Length: 83
Image 1 (cartoon, one colour):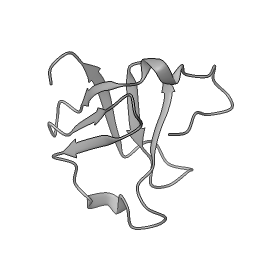
Image 2: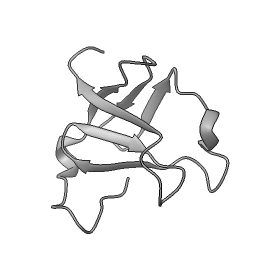
Image 3: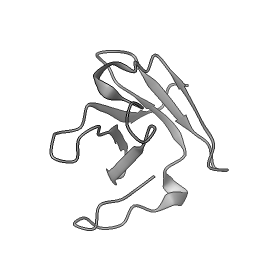
Image 4: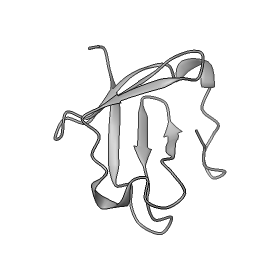
């Protein structure tokens, strides 16, 4: 996971948890050991087509995919308490 140099760093200890996109019900579960699982994440829009899939965070409680560095995030997932 990457953090932008323009924002305060995100504490990696606080990242583990379940993140969800309400619209698609896409989910990412980040584990404390650095592994993750994903459900309902579509490869549409170029996810994984160039350089693999990269997950980013700039603020606590939110992770996102960005397929083009000059474009807005293609999928944003917000931390949830549901598993």
